[in-house]
Image 1 (cartoon, one colour):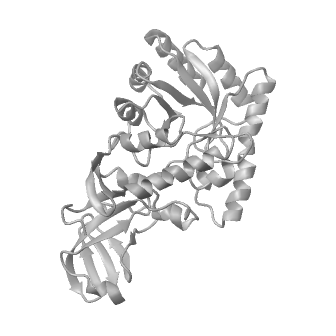
Image 2: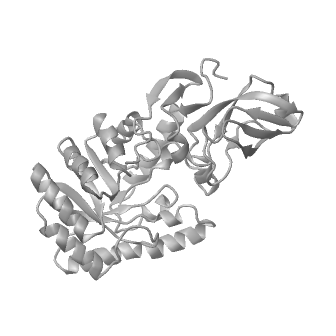
Image 3: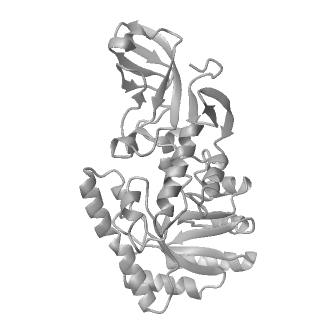
Length: 356
């Protein structure tokens, strides 16, 4: 398998990727909300451009560093769905706003004032989404008067534009069974509607209500008040989303590993450990019938073998589907792109390590 690729290596099946992008674009086109995919999983300019070519209105990032990497690659419209705090990051943010359209999330009055001062000094305008806590209990203000007061502050601030609300239901992405996920998403996302109604009753227009993830897109993406969908993992997929009902989308992302030892008939050791594939949510899926991942160490993975899998030999290569794609991708500099079963070149993971 892919003798020309050394291991561990990050593989990306391009036809599967393209089908995933097309499926989500078609889903968005069937509703009223537009697609602004999150790049925190793939961190790749080439993938972002494929998403824009398929109809996305822009790209979402988590950090200024991610946005800088995508802007370097020519992405023209970026939402940073996070609060950007402190003079160092804000200075980079307003510099970025000279190169592309930038929107950020806000949930603090002092931060709004700092963003305003920096934007005015730089001669740029920053779009702002007031982040509303819809149940994730992370960032965000509460709907009602807290959200309305902050929206008014943004609207009055020079250099800023109040463009809408950030409302991400990340706490619901993996809830099972699906019926419970659906019920809770419909309930919790009404907080975004409530915040919007309260703000508009006070005389401000809420242009966008932005949120949604791969695990909730079929629910949140059809709520009539949502205008923008930030789904991200669907493009490459991983074993976790597949396990909670993401079968519509294909696993385009795998890690290629080599068997380096066969210490027992029912055991193989591979050269991919914690530094090659991340363990949160659980172990990777081994794409060999009868093989199961059972343990990690830094540079090794332990796989048990039964039936046909016992035919594996030292030097054989096997494919692993990461349980969590986001953090696994961040371990690699490049994707090895596979097309029609053959190695077709590399794409840079341009935003790798951009956690600032």
